Amino acid sequence: MAATTAERRETIKEIVCDILEIDPDEVTQTSRFKEEHDADSLRAIEILASLEKTFGIVINQSELGRMVNLDGVYEVVAESAGWN
Image (cartoon, rainbow, N blue to C red):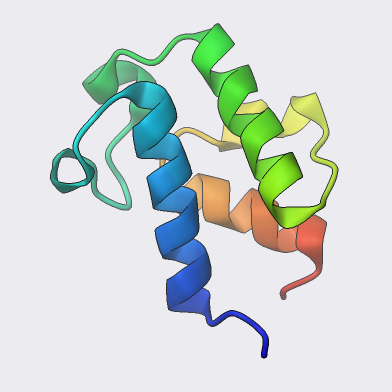
């Protein structure tokens, strides 16, 4: 059975929170990783690599500029995975 949007969003949130070492309650769909959670470019690359491995997709590094919050990450992953 295919995962639902909610399940996919939750998986993405878990990945991001694990890499940024933050509590899931601290992050919202629109909170900005760099400004609000002290993420750096190395963490961004870690997030990208983990998403690629988890979902079996390839994400161009040029998409990192869009991956500033959970909403942005979901959009990029959804496009790369063909969920839309």
